[in-house]
Image: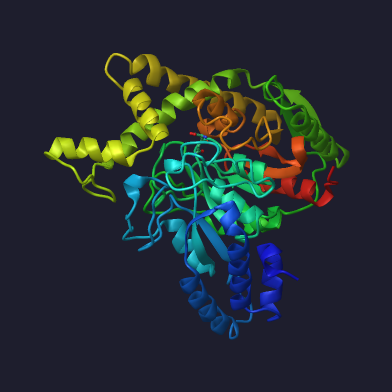
Length: 480
Ligand code: GLN
């Protein structure tokens, strides 16, 4: 049996019974990485030596421990916009090349306490801006299901690493769909928690009112365990809420009897691939057969979500990215005439095209005279989108939608057409605007035998419900 293929909860059984050592798990993972990483390109950096050192430490410790935690000794990959102390954190941007954070993100501390072993940092669209991972300044990541297609984005490296067996699990970040969409396109599980569920301390900010860190895993069980570990209040992030963390794995019950699920009509419109739509409807029917109650619902402001998101996200990004001026972090131009010139050249040379496009757009929408017409209006529409969800969740426990309108597209297909690329997130961004949680789980295959993802949404702080529905579906799925 190849250890790299197993989800964390299965590895845990073997580790606990001492049938395998943590060192063997890490060796299996790195052997797999050596075999396929050339073709996939999921990682920006790897740390085999440190991982092996940690593994040995855990093996020693586990030999004394009766009941090790479920993530003790489990290898994990981290999206390279999450700070790990003294490990280069680039956000796939030239401007952060050479930035070694002097501290670790709260989620990293929590993972370490749980015993996870960090194996490397994964590729992403520069500063998490994109839907295909093609905006990385350093490399292209390929979808393990078809190397000519994109893995989705912006957490494409994390999703591809889990799908290819290069990582047992991974962390991603989701501002408008960046966990769920790559998870869908790579055939793995990805969950964006409620805004405020997981600390953002140490996550490099893109759009602070939308960003959340979340798990990317091989199955729903691993997702529940990883979510439990990273969730909870943090003094270092004032937007992280003081809500008790439920024992998420307890909600992995294969039972949806009486659960009310809505199918929003606005999510099954033109532009969506026939096979994607068929798969989602078939999957919803399966849940109905298992006892759920299905009904069509409406979220009338959905059509404004993409426009609203690209105003708010770019506005926040333009402000967050102002700090990269060649002084505090990473890269500085070699050719400076004076201070202002140094700022300008550093940013000109350090940022890629998509990041510059967003800084310009964001600066514009925040500028005097336009602020009310664009940013102010977008904030008001955001409230309307949020209210749409609040209204349906008074009657329904969850919503089911496609995660992405298409399966993985070809590398290069949309890179020159930003508007087309922006539409990849049409089904995921509303959840970020409303602050609600969402999960994407594999639900069969579409065009060219590429994976399709089903998205489940619930009201804020109801991840238990997401996990329960997802688990029931996973246990009963008959792959088409
Ligand atoms: N694709 C969206 C964007 O480009 C969302 C990215 C994300 O969730 N980080 O902004």
